[in-house]
Each structure stands twice: as C-alpha cells, then as structure tokens.
Image 1 (cartoon, rainbow, N blue to C red):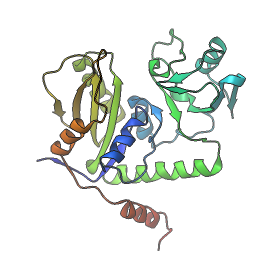
Image 2 (spheres, helix red, strand yellow):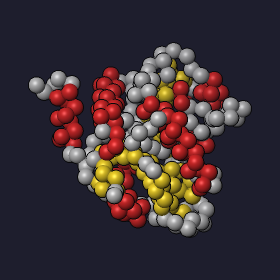
Image 3 (cartoon, helix red, strand yellow):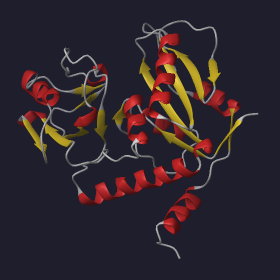
Length: 267
C-alpha cells in the first residue's frame, strides 16, 4: 500500500528542489531549507537537534569577499579564514552564482571538508558540508520569519512524521550508486530521521532500474550525460514519485491555522 503523504519539504542541495515542487504543485508551505545551499547530512543534523544551532549567532557569519571582510558575533573558524586569505581575489562560486561582491550568510558550524587536511576551495560544490542561507539572517525581521518556519516544521515533524516526505535532489554523485545509497541509510539511522525521504539521485553511471524503494526511502535514478543535453524538468522523476506515494497534501491555510492555534494566536 502506498505511503500516504500530507506534507512535502525540500531539503537541498540548493534551490532546485523547491522550484520543482512548486512547478508540479507539490508545495504548500515554506520549509527551513528552501533556497539554501545545504548538503543532506547537514539537513539531517539540524532536524535531529530541532534547529537548536541553525540560527545561533555564535555560528553565523557574513562574508564580503571583495572587501576581505568577515562579520561574526563570536569566533570565525579556521576553514573560513583560510578560504578568504588563500583565495582573496578568486570568487567563491556555486554553479552560475558568484559571491565575490554579494554578501554570503552561512552557519560556519557546518562548513567543512570531512578530510580536514584538504582546505575549502572557491567552488562550493566541492565542499563536503555546507550551510549557506538565502537571507540576511542578521536582519531581525527575516530572522524572526525563518525561526517561525523552523518551529512550524518542528511541530509537523514531531506530531506527524509518518506523513512527512523530505525531497532532495543531489548534485552529480561521486560514489557508486550502491555505496551512496548505503551512506544515506547510515545517515538516517545516525540522525534518527523518522519520516519518508524521496531523493532524485543524479549519476553518470548507467542504471538498470528507474527507481528503488527501500523502507522509508524512494531513490529515483537520473542518469546525467556529460557530453549531451539533459532534461532538467524532472517531469519523469516526479511522475515516479506520484505513482509510488499516495500524496494528499494539507493546504497552507490549515497548516498555518493549526500552527497559530498552537501558539495561542487563535483562541
């Protein structure tokens, strides 16, 4: 019997997942990770601690690379300092986005390479862990809005985990498909993730099956051809998701009403 899903939230790697959800009418309310540049493990880590350190001022930094400036309420970790000092005239980039003159807001607690011997370079997609926020989290109004989004997500995830689906689109993975799936399963166990996960896994390796359903994970395989054009509409992959799941999404109005009621805004 298909898994019944009432809530779908994007969880990285960047803005593509939330755009795909909106394109195919699978979006109902904002999630904490929408439009962020954030890896899957970091999403899981923040879910495990209920976003306790997600917007912690002790971990937040703003980088203005063109001015060689790092703004932080507390310390700045060595990874960030070395990145700016070593590449002061080489723009930090992600795909076609250039952060050289644009302020970058990040939670430095999650910015690192797993192999500490290898320093961060200016191409963000090379980093093992990353947590770059889309908004100026030092702005009081924007920060308050994002905190509310986190609280609403926590409530839904805490009360109805069996009906929550996380939606992730990978970068092109650099591991064999079987090994990558095992890594994701290990993360889920380690961080105690209790809801469903749908992943579109982008790989250059040929695959025999279009998807694989393992317990609470739907792996949808997307083969990327490096020497040819690729279909990034994700229509085929979304159709597989709709076929494998019983998606009956709760409306944004009901989600917001329930949250406001719990917060005492509605009595």
